[in-house]
Length: 96
Image 1 (spheres, one colour):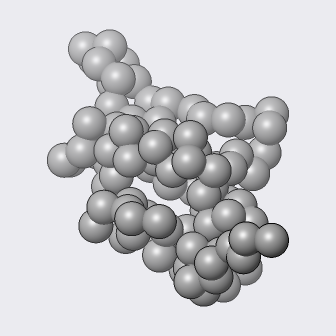
Image 2: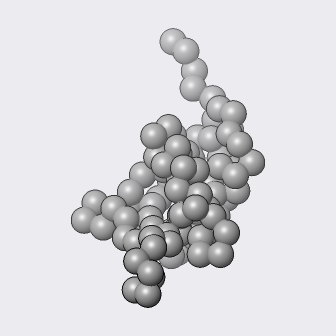
């Protein structure tokens, strides 16, 4: 599966959290000052099935600046799905 550089970096970051035994809390937003990854990058991996929400009761949480009410970022609690691990270890499905 062909992924963009941003998607590959995000996958590596989530794996880093998993190997450290921590929950992968990924901040997504418009990019820049308040978030490391764009929301579109995170949601594209969710749609492809490479990652999934780790906690179904807490899909994503956001933060708004109380001064101006602008939305700055969402925090996603995600984990690598089986399809994502296959991508990481370069396992190709066999056709039977």
